[in-house]
Image (cartoon, rainbow, N blue to C red; front, side):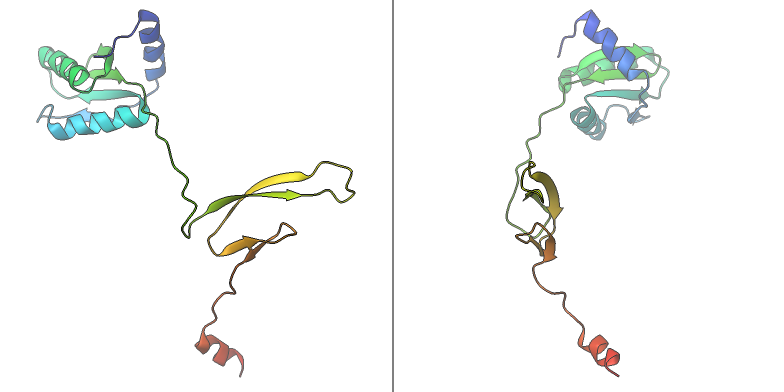
Length: 156
C-alpha cells in the first residue's frame, strides 16, 4: 500500500474536492469487475472518487482497505459514502510508427522571400495520400479516382 505524507494527503483532498465519483459500488459489493474499473480509473486519472451504496460503515471501511491493498493505492479520504483513492499515473510511451497510411507529422522549412530573414518552420500533419512539394505546399500523391458513371453523365 502506498504511503502519503499529511501534506500530500491534504493537497490531494483539496484536488479531489471538485471530482465526481467515477465508480459506484452497489449491492453486489466489491466484485472483481468493480476492482478492475477502479484499477482502470486509477491508471487513467491517478486520483479518483468511489461512491459506496450501503449503510454499513464497517463494510465501507473494509472495502476501502481492501481496494488500497489489492490495487496498491493510497487511501486519501473516507467521508460518508465517498472514498478518495490515489495512485500515481503510469507513464505510457507511445511509439511513432512511420509506416502505414495514417497521419504523419512533417516539418516544412520555407526560406524568407528576401533571403535575409530567418526561414519559417511549420509542423503539419499530412495524410497517407499526400506529399509535400519542394515549395512547401501539400499535394495529393495520386489524383482522386473518378467514377466512370459520373464522367459519362457529365460529358452529355
